[in-house]
Length: 74
Image (cartoon, rainbow, N blue to C red; front, side, top):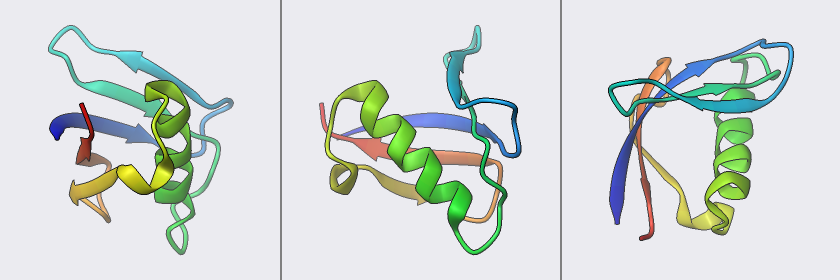
C-alpha cells in the first residue's frame, strides 16, 4: 500500500484532480462536506483516477479535515 497526501476542496465547480509541486494532490469535488458526502465523492474520484476499486481506498488520517492521507494499493 502506498500513502498519498491530499488537499480536498469541497463545493468546487467541477470534479478534478491536480498535482502540486510538492507531490500533494488537490482534489476538487462538487459535493459539500456534510454527512460524509465529500469523503465518498473523494474516494469515488480517486478510484476512477487510479483505476482501483473504491473498497481498496482508505482514508488513514483527516476524515473530517481538508488535508487527508489515503492508502491505495500499488
